[in-house]
Image (cartoon, rainbow, N blue to C red; front, side):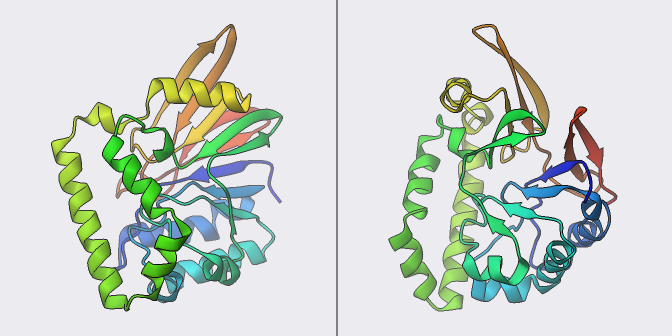
Length: 243
């Protein structure tokens, strides 16, 4: 097992064949094999309408993840806003462990909070209402009973509505709220935060009452830029992944 912990998010792997899917498979067979652990902080998939459909549509990724966990590398997953229906069958088929969001870790000696990140976009009130509704177990249970064609149609409508909402909404509203971030640092007693969702990879510095804190925003993947966050005892760095 390697000495570094790797973090990725927002790959948005499509159902159709894609260079991104190829890059992810190479990453799992290559750099990820040398990691102490791999954390996937949501939106690995562009759409996930249930384990019954997703495990078939993403059979290559399922096999690659199983090969990685079978080789002894722990893989952890937090739900994103596109793949929050990833469930127990996915975990059983891949060996991936599904985590709560947010979650506090002791990461190479540094108290660290990890999250997909959408929880902290509190200025986008409409989205937060949808998030709260869609995460209800009863709502998800009813959705999973629907025929696949219905689920796919509903998911397509939600994606189209989300795209229209983004076009009509100021970009700052869809970013994380500074007060929510500072509150999370204080509530969880951490000095480092790692999240995705916003597609704005950057490192942010904070001073919370004399306590220096850092927030790392993971990169979204697209052809020409695929990236993982590499964390070890020496610190944090961004490493490119061949696309």
